[in-house]
Amino acid sequence: MPDMLVKLYELPEKHELIRELEEKEIQVRRGIGPEKHIVVEWVRKNFNPHWASECDIAFSRQPVSCFIAHRGQEILGFACYDATYRNYFGPTGVTPDCRGQGIGKALLLASLHGMAEQGYAYGIIGGAGPVEFYQKTLGAMVIEGADKGIYKGMLR
Image 1 (tube, rainbow, N blue to C red):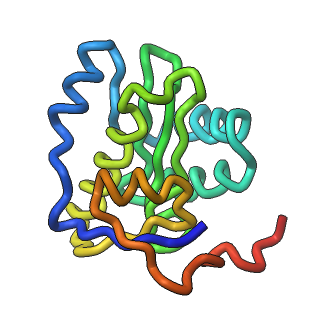
Image 2 (tube, rainbow, N blue to C red):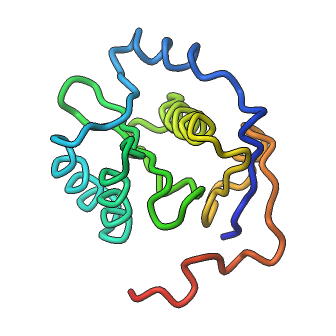
């Protein structure tokens, strides 16, 4: 999976999508410290321990660089940035039964706007899975030669 480059100074607007989700009682927001253990364990259970480790790091940043989507006490998805490397978006995931509702897109936009607010002009999507989605949604460009990315040689 290739890394991709995104212009953070030309991001789509996020507020309308987040408002639409709020009408469905879905909140998209930055996580807070006391939730760290809950979110990290949820990521471990629903995705994998590598992503849980990255999520743990994102909760250690100030401001927290993990956004969550939830309905009441039920976590529906998450997205991190500045987890493995500075200026990198990911990991991100939404539960299978909640996909296709705009939750992943809202988490993506909230995270990338958060990166822009911290002064980044460009962002890197690390190991981008759905390349076409990122191209269509953000105008993201594949970084040639980065198909092995930062995870090459990682302990597994």
